[in-house]
Image 1: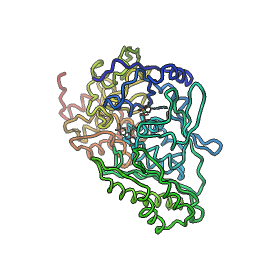
Image 2: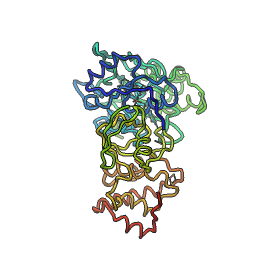
Image 3: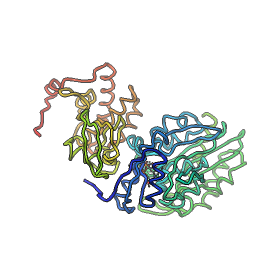
Length: 297
Length: 176
Ligand SMILES: Cc1cc2nc3c(=O)[nH]c(=O)nc-3n(C[C@H](O)[C@H](O)[C@H](O)COP(=O)(O)OP(=O)(O)OC[C@H]3O[C@@H](n4cnc5c(N)ncnc54)[C@H](O)[C@@H]3O)c2cc1C
Ligand code: FES
Ligand code: FES
């Protein structure tokens, strides 16, 4: 039995009620969505137990959605991973990377609990939707009693378990520009098993072709510089942009350009050398997969 | 303490719980529902899976204080008194149970699956059952059990007489 007597829980009546509670009690409050990350952090004593938990479940009705409006794809922060699979993100080939993430996300039961907002706010190199959404060049929408602000996801994730969220704010939405027809995406998660894995290397690709020329490309990894958070491989992207898609170009990007901008770390799980090698492989596989999807192969 | 009113297997309870009490502990320690097992306590093994408002959740990662008004179903609530649910019968007949620790979790995730997909493919069965870890390695037999259960349900055979099943398969009632 694990009972932490000092924590209280608050159930807001509405979004504005939640924001007022946050404003009044920050920084002694932690919002709780699925709780699949937060409860373990508290249990493992990786964070100081907060004085209050702010229960986000009552806001599900307002903040669980996927919609395309005015050329922008918008995802409500409280959308569960299972609910994502019931939307256009799983039926339109441009978003195929979402299906890839889903296939290897936790377990089936976990997908019902975990939310996309919780995934972004967990802010680790293992937050698969951060890696994926960096490839979609996503923005996050933050709300407090003072109003709303938008930030690039790449600026929002500052460091491991550190975001640009102010203690009185909630993440309410993540969005990205609706990609063009001749585009697709992919996500590679490489590990020893197929499921219940954090990923030794993860990689996300967004590719836009015009004829066979790479009109635009964005590539993200679980880690690029030494920082333990997902990031874009910008030099590799630059090298690829404007070139004709071919196996030679992909090979050169993976073997020559990527290593020049990537610093991997060694831990108990895998060595830096191995991770770099598998990053090259993942880049090649990810680009090929996105290419084949555009071509309908 | 937080007041929560929740329905477990059709029975309504008004409880006063500490804010961070896990549903797992509420079910086992307060309500005596022992099919719910704690393996890892961290969302990995699935032996604590129950249904909350029809969705499979890990009771070890669920706070009871958040469940006011919710409906919880455990293995004990799958069939009315004196009956066994088709999924239970299929699991008995597939003879997958070895130590049995994981079985309640497997049956509950199967219920969640068959509530959504009437005739799941092999891939789908594997995807859903991957939520639960079986140390004894009963997976292949459990996959068969799910197919058998789907067939029973399709034929409209949802509940079976418990006494008959027990006699047929020589299953004893263990003293509590
Ligand atoms: C067994 C297991 C397997 C896992 N597998 C994967 C995996 O394959 N891939 C993966 O990416 N992750 C995985 N995870 C990690 C975790 O489940 C995910 O990161 C999940 O998406 C977190 O969402 P949540 O809703 O449960 O977050 P919570 O635990 O509720 O919250 C996480 C953090 O975000 C904050 N927060 C939540 N919502 C908001 C909001 N709207 N505004 C501001 N702050 C907020 C919380 O305060 C907390 O700090 C796994 C976890 C477990 C236990
Ligand atoms: S005890 Fe809940 S998943 Fe293992
Ligand atoms: S039968 Fe023993 S753990 Fe599954």
